[in-house]
Amino acid sequence: MSSNQLDKKSEAWSALFSEPMSELVKRYTASVFFDKRLWQADIQGSLAHAEMLAAQGIIGASDLADIQRGMAQITSEIEAGTFQWQLDLEDVHLNIEARLTQLVGDAGKRLHTGRSRNDQVATDVRLWLRGETDLIIGLLTDLQRALVEVAERNVEVILPGFTHLQVAQPVSFAHHLLAYVEMFSRDAERFADVRRRTNRLPLGSAALAGTTYPLDRERVAKTLGMEGVCQNSLDGVSDRDFAIEFTAAASLCMVHISRLSEELILWMSQNFGFVKIADRFTTGSSIMPQKKNPDVPELARGKTGRVVGHLMGLITLMKGQPLAYNKDNQEDKEPLFDTVDTLKDTLRIFAEMVGGQVNPATGAKEGGITVNAAAMEAAANKGYATATDLADYLVKKGLPFRDAHETVAHAVKAATSHNCDLSELPLTVLQGFHPSIEKDVYGVLSLRGSLSARNTLGGTAPAQVREQIARHRNRLG
Image (cartoon, rainbow, N blue to C red):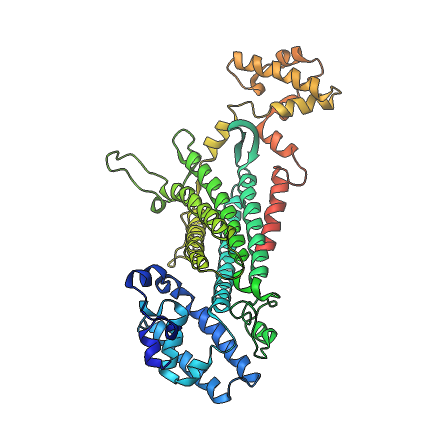
C-alpha cells in the first residue's frame, strides 16, 4: 500500500475488503479525537521499538535515522498545533504512522515490523498512565502538606469529635485534619503500587501470539524505563487490570475527598460556623443575597460518584471478554482519561482551598481555611464530651469500667436535667454518684484536660499531635 493510500483510507487492511467502511461506522469506531492525548507515549514507544529493531538488524541504521527525524518533525507539528488529525485514520496510532510515512517513505512502513496495534495501544496507555500517576502522587503530596500546615497552626484548637454525628469526645482540630493526611498518604501508597504493575511492557506481544522476528523486548523495556515485560502475549495485549486498579485507587481517593468535602460543608454552615473558605471557592445565590454556597466541596462530593461510576464501567467492560484483544477495549480510554482529569483537577483545587496560595508580591500564603476556634470549643462544651473521662477517673479509683459507665450515665442525666455541663455540677452532687470523687475531678472534666490525658501514640494530646506533624513534615519533605 502506498503512503497516499494510507492517507486516504482508515483500513490498513483494505485489500481484503470489497467496499469501504460506511461513514456511520467510521464515526462510531473512531477514537482519534480522544486517544490523541496518547501521542507522546505513542512516539516514545515507537522510537524505543525502532531503536531495538535496528540493534537487532531487523531494520537498517538509515531507516532508524529516518524514523527519528520524522518523529521529531511530528512532535514539533503536534506541539505547534499544526498536525492534521484525520477521522479517516481512526486513531492516534494510524495518524502518526501515516504522517511518518508521508515524511520518510518506506522507513515509516517498516516501523510496524514485529508489533501490532494491539500491543502498541496497550504500551501507549501504560506509558501515559505511568506519567499521570506520578503527577497524581505529587498532587497528593501537595494536599497533604496543605493539611499539615493548617494542622500546625491549630494544635491547641478544640473540636468536638463526633460519632454518629453526635458529640463524643473533644479532639484537637489538628488531630482531625491529620486523619485525612493519613488517608491521602495511603492513597499515595496505593498509586505507587499501581504504578509498579502498570510499568510493564506489552510491546512484542504483537497481535496475540508473539512474533517471528528476533525482538529484544527487555531492551525496549529498559529504554522506556519499565520494570519488566508482560510474560504472556495473550495477557499482554488484553490485560486492562492496571486501568481498573488505577480507577479503584482513584475512587478510594475521591471517597476520601468526598468525606472531607462533607465535613467542610457542615462546618461552613451557620449551624456549625467552625470554618470559612476563601470566597473564590464559593458561589452566591440568584435570589438570596446572603448566601455563600460551598460549591467546590459539593461538586467534589458529586464527582466522586462519577469516578466510582467509571470503575464500575471498566469492570463491566472486561467481565465478558474472551482472550485476547477485543474492540470493547477501545472503551477503556474515555473513562480512564476522565478519571485522571477529574482526580488531578480535584486534588489541585483542594490543595489551594485548604492551604491557600502564595501571593507573588509578598511571598506569603493567602486564603485557605479560616478556623473559628471559639465556635468549635463552644460546640464541644455542649455534648458532655468529657463523660468518658469521668468514667476513666472512676476506674482509676477502683471501680470496674462497666460500673463506672453506669455511674456516669446517671451523672449525665442529672446534668441534662439541670441544663448544665458535667464540669458545672457542684462537687457535692458529683459525690452523690460516687464518694470517691474529689475536687481534682474538675481538671479531668475540662476539655483541655481530656485532650492532654490522651497522650498515647496516635492519640489527640497536643504533644502527640506535634510529634505526628513532625513525622509528616519529615516524610513529605
